[in-house]
Length: 198
Image (cartoon, rainbow, N blue to C red):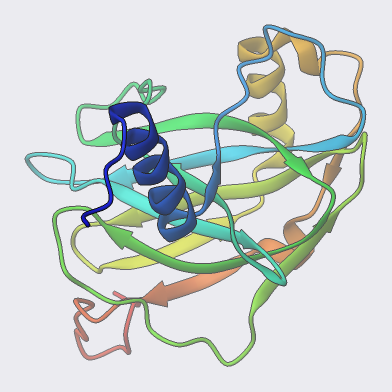
C-alpha cells in the first residue's frame, strides 16, 4: 500500500528539509524594535567597486562550532548607501547570538571564484548586550580581492545616523581581530606585484 499524505504535511516536510540543508541564516536587524538583551549587535559596511555593473559581493560569517548559524553580508538585494556610480554597498547591522564567529569565505554572485585558503582563520567574539564594529569590507572587480579596514571613527558615526537605536550605545571596535589584508579568490590576477597588490 502506498503512503498517502495531506498537502500541509508535504509542505511542512519540505520546509523542514530545506531548513536543515540551508541552515539558519540571521536576517538583518533594522533597529525598529528594541535590541534583544540576550543577543549582540554587529555593525560595519560592505562595498564593491566595479566598472559597468555590480557583481554581487558576499561575505560569509558563521558561528564557530555551529556550521549552519550564519550571517551573510551582501551588496545586492539591499539598500545602496554609496554615492558613487561605480560603488555598491551598504551599512549593516545584525543581531546575533553571543559567541565566536568566523569570517570563512567570500565570493561574487556572478563569478565562480573560490575563496583562497587562509593560514589563520579570522575569528571574533561577541557578548550578549554588546554592540561591535567588525570593519568595512571592500572588494573590486579588477583584483578579485577582499579587504577589511578600520574606519571606525567615520563609519560608526554614519551608522548611528542611519540606525538611531545605536545612539547612546558603546560600540566596541573589533577590527584588531577582523581586519583582512587583501584576501584573493581563484579569479584574482597577479600583475607582477603579488596577488591583490597593484
